[in-house]
Image (cartoon, rainbow, N blue to C red; front, side, top):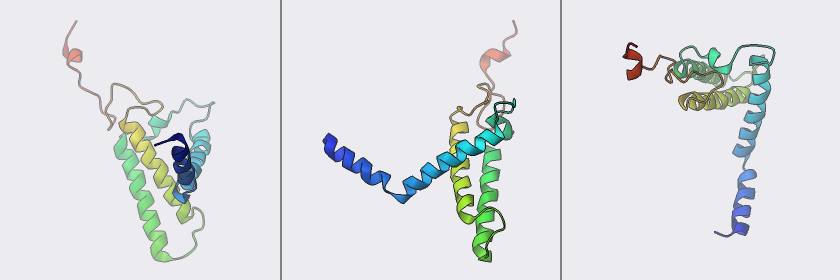
Length: 127
């Protein structure tokens, strides 16, 4: 595949609405992280999820129930729109993947994706 055809393919991808939604989710995530993990605070992102991916999954499940409720009621919500709810789900899914990779801010390397202590054979050796 030549450079010209790759550029055309990339331009067509950028025009997809779903890609635009992902860009909006990135912007939303960056803005919200300023509130949740401000520079003046010692709170890290990982501190919000005491049970690691399980905690994040609980939040995602709650967002799914909210979406279902909004869809079934057919009314206008007072605060967070259905679109906002879906964007939050996308962002929480990215948090889950980040946590599973061990790369979330504040995540401890000696803990697994459920935030449980990793049993390392060398820890059992008494010095």
